[in-house]
Amino acid sequence: MLKKRIIPCLDIKEGRTVKGVNFVGLRDAGDAVELAKRYVQEGADELVFLDITATVEKRKTLTELVRRVAEAINIPFTVGGGISTLEDAQAIIRAGADKISLNTSAVDNPELITGIADQFGNQCVVLAIDTKLEENGEWMVYVHGGRTPTPLRTLDWAKEGEKRGAGEILLTSMNNDGTKSGFAIDITRSVSEAVNIPVIASGGAGSLEHFADVFRETRASAALAASIFHFGEIPIPTLKHYLQEQKIPVR
Amino acid sequence: MIAIIKYNAGNITSVENAVRRLGYPCLVTDDIDEILRADKVIFPGVGEAKSAMIYLKERELDDVIQSLHQPVLGICLGLQLMCSHSEEGDTACFGIFDARVKKFPPGEIVPHMGWNNLSDLRSPLFAGFGKEDTVYFVHSYYAELCAQTIATCNYILPFSAAMQRDNFYATQFHPEKSGSVGENILHNFLRL
Image (cartoon, rainbow over the protein chains, first blue to last red):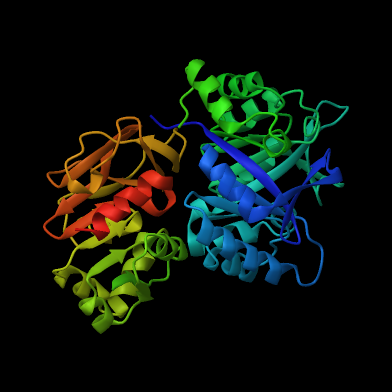
């Protein structure tokens, strides 16, 4: 039986991991390669590296980190953050990443999804969507790390991303991110039922029950979290054991 | 020397890294002499069947691969290209295995992406594989079950997770991405 995936996310700045709380206020949580290896030992099913470095040397630093990670770990990993051209994607994939995650650059240039998918296959393209519930009750797409609203409705953008060749959707609820109050069940359910590609639920994980809830109440294939794993609040083996007891298939 | 066949599709670095971690010298090459001389050959890949086949034909690698006598391991698209035909791009493949490659039916979540169990294991490749062990898959097309199936996986329907005929071995899953379980499978192949 296909297992539900548990994915730690490592926010990367200049080769080290950081985690934003509600996308602001960063805390240092250690060396990226060492942390990645620890997660593999603990039973993480995949890893996501999100680069938030904003310097000119960014691409070179990131490519070098991807190369080191690929040498060190034996599970799949995704790299995202500022990948805005086919050449960026090629460099990251050739360095050993399994998937590329696109966010702002996909909204600015949806052709990029198709371009990468055509060259490397749909499974290489993860469409990352930061979504926010507006006062009018609509879940809207935000870009630039959640700072900039767009006129895109989340459900429409998810479907368009699938049509353009994305192989997976990483859906982060900005309302829930950093709150530890649980995943955004309603939008995760809507998106996961509207598309036929895997959806990764993200934002809001704070307890074991939150993971069971999102897998029971939505069609999500995976759940992603950062700080609760980095600071050891929920060890991955504890989470896996709990989900198994709850009859949710995990590795 | 282990030769990893270089072609235009996907993440070959991962296969190279996995072989090196197991302590075997390897090279990524599309040079026919180097491939013929290798002790073992790995034919990896993710990507699209038709363009991969065109690339291989242009370099005459399709005939070379089929003529090899040393152990060969196809991975993912490698397995599919060793079947008779793929629905992806309506592509005629090598025909080493008597199976056709089909697209998963619509309405389900595709690609089949993530960790899944194996059953009906019939090969030394799976020595040491535990009943609860899982391996990592990512694919939208699958090979039917056939006489050369040596491991079955169930997603939507049962399909060939691994196949073998004579010196030709292949896995639909990615041993190089399947943690220590996958490393063990790769090691079993490298020790053949």
